[in-house]
Image (cartoon, rainbow, N blue to C red; front, side):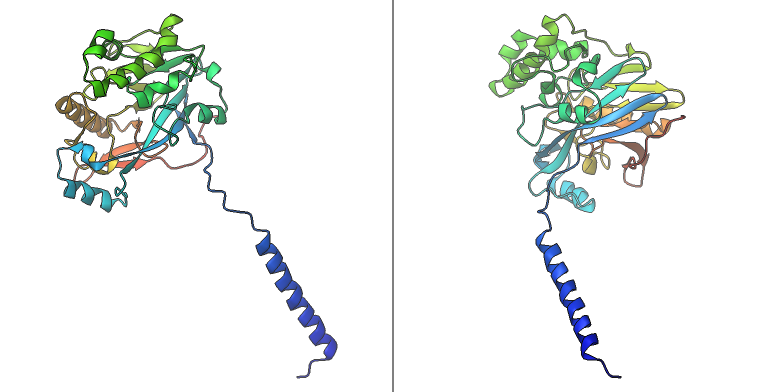
Length: 327
């Protein structure tokens, strides 16, 4: 087979042009963006719209987990490909609930209290289509700073200016007591100060209203006593139609360890033995009732189901998908 000069020229030109295009395309490739999408996730619980809001992440040293040898802790984490060399990456989540009559925020995140890897609840709430002014109720699982600092801005003003703030009476009695704060060990006093500063603008506006366990804080939302992590730690059970979800706050901090062995406590528990009893009861109830769970420190979006397995319990996270409605 013979190839004419014109055919060769056209072929060479095509190769050259193609190579040029490749070089040009490669030269115009943009830099890696290295940013995530806004951190929000939406689902329906019956007629209630639930939006998970990502506050960010922090790292927890495995030595803070109590009741299991470090070697065994690392074995559990390694089995789940959880890198704990520089601390366990631990999410901080809040949850926004639209009942049709109320817009309710459960926990407010950490704002600037713990550095730049946290403090994104407000921005992600806006990204999800709402504004802080839309929120009419803020429910606190407890008054630790990674949940409460996001209530107020740097000027000490309420981030949620139209919201009634509600926390358990037991937690309010503990963290908002100035005499108790003054008598606390020096290392613990900042935790009292952060809680008091965050709640202050709501108290001053007469919009702070504590609840007790068993109260139906809003229609279809009942406060449950899950104390142990703090004196008044509470969870919130949502019931709508035939669906249900427990927003459980800090019942679990390390899913890689505490599902396998619920008797592992964490340094931050005010009453470790009670926190263990609470965790065991809550996990067993979630298995039996098959309701949704939303956890403040579960991997974002922090929503899933609990099942039993050979070793203990197992977390089944929700899958990303469209928001299912009856419309």
